[in-house]
Length: 531
Image (cartoon, rainbow, N blue to C red; front, side, top):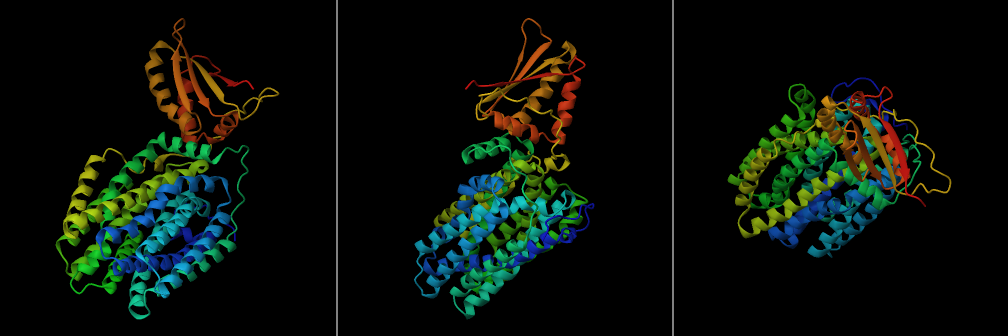
């Protein structure tokens, strides 16, 4: 099945379904995620039966999220250089075997708290290696104009599964026993593997150079560091998820401590979070017509704080269910806005690695928050912990308000292809040798302050596209003469740099060239370390 999408202008919330590949993978992922949510409810509830200590129960959530923080960047580097489809098929096959073994141990009543945490870590590690690849294939399935709707639909699919999976898990646990959710989760992997086998994406463009995984991870980190739109997204995401993780981590204990609470209420609360998220996903396209991504995050943050407060002050099931519904609605608004902000801030060549950094922040904050709130609840109470989290969430929003979400939505990150071909290196020189590029400018005295400002901003482009160092010098003998210098780890990396200049960056470069006094513009010279 082809992965090409309809290139027409953005339609409604369901426009991405016009792409057959998107519809196929979305449906398969929905079924697989129902199994995943059944598994999570089963694992959380199983731990409350094995050891109900809050510090231990919250370790299940931490073990789910911590591997993504540890391995996402490596996974992103792999996804940027390997066939994503084959990578996803292999990981899903391995996870199916692990989950089947877990189900067998639960059925035989051989599970212990330590074993459950170890299995959760292994499954979380598999998810960590899948996540950047899944995120990076979305732009291959739909046109850019439909990207927001596609991300919202993916989030909606997760939350439809969250609405079905937990409720189904609660019924299965009550009627068939704790092993049932894990058994069905193992079978759900068959569906996603079959869909991946049917999907036929366009062939990857061959890379002209190949660097080590460590170098590619370093390039990805450097790109994110010098990408202002991505940096703002990460800061705001960390400030939100550390505090919002409180009700996710403590939800089994909230359900157990409620009036008449039990596995059924826990499944119901999870289902209502999913129902709220699905409703939010359907409302987001209409909301986008009136508010920005940044304003959507603010609204969702306030909604999350209210949900935390409601869970803290009441143990009545109806109040908890209302709070869960609001929490899901707010969660999808914030999460989708962050995902769109990250996707639109990244060019294709580094997308998986950049999204891996986003996932590291997301899951790292969730893991750290889960451990923090579990320890706080063990030393104090669940209610007090939720009150502290709600207060911290609002204070964090105020402290990070200057970092605007969605800056990349107005940028054109398609390759500009305006740089001329680089010269051939001398015979006997290796393309692996470090390289240096200089750009000579002649700038009138009246324009020099503007030139320095513009070039200092443009230096971020050099650094995020491959350069490791950047400098600007002015001639002492001839003050109109300026030299920009940037260093690269290899000549091969400079060749890749030629392909990475985006249309937005090309416009900024054009403004710089206009300040040069010479009709032909700045003079570029290339250097390579001798063999």
